[in-house]
Amino acid sequence: MSLRDAPLLYVFVDVHGLPRERELLETVVGFPVIEIEPHLPHHRHGAVKYDAGRLIFSVNLSSPGKFRADRSDALVTVFDVDPARRLGERLRDYGRVEARPEGELFTDASGHHYLFRPAPGTSAGPAAAELRLTVDDLAASARFYADVLDLEPRERSAKRARFATGTIDLVLEESDSAADGRLPDRRTCLIVFYTAEMDKARNALEARGLDFGNKRGAFSEIGGTARFDDPSGHRFCLYEPSAESLTWESGPKVKQLAASGDAAL
Image (cartoon, rainbow, N blue to C red; front, side):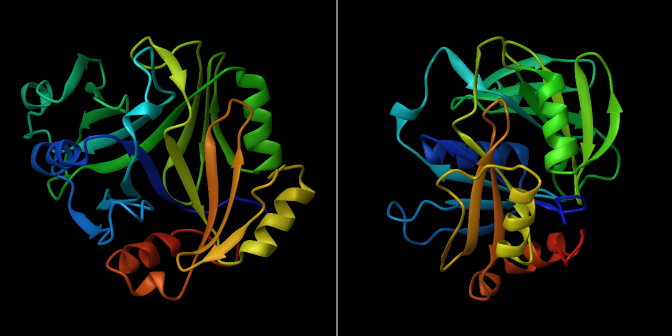
């Protein structure tokens, strides 16, 4: 048993200024909302959750002190968007926009990076295409994703490696800086893998050499979780949804994405 074919279920990003972030994501970018946390600020596990196609994109409310001006995410979330949607000028009111050969790289006020790529057939809303992670040492990271997590390698070059999951690809890019040139920050994002059996999956991954440290697992109203870091410090979580959580507004989307991979994991 491993994470091969396990769906990537969530990406959680910490933000400050939640109303402004919601305006950006919903009004400008066009993400469909699938769930809003009703008990803010006390509960912060997914303040607002969005349907991003083959992923649930979720923002968490956090304090401004968590963010540093000299740092930004060591992650770029790539979204395919309707070519008819011209986001560039509207995005400039909310952060930094840089034209890239693939599309528009946008960095928001919290330091999160999104690459919007024009793609036909995405008129229903932005669709997550891949996650690009800045890593310190590509060789060490590639060994971790291939040998410990057992993800399927799809391509490899001197500075880049691509791995498949049950939903979207993870792309490792070796660099000393984040996408906008600042120092890379790996504290404000959490990438979540789905598992149907938390204890079984965690024990199998530990047998493959994964060290969960003091975060081996806990169960609560949301379900079972166990967190781990990759060699560069990117934060990951295994998640087994509870029966209760599947009755929430995001439940149908969780079930849909869970069915994309190996439900026996």
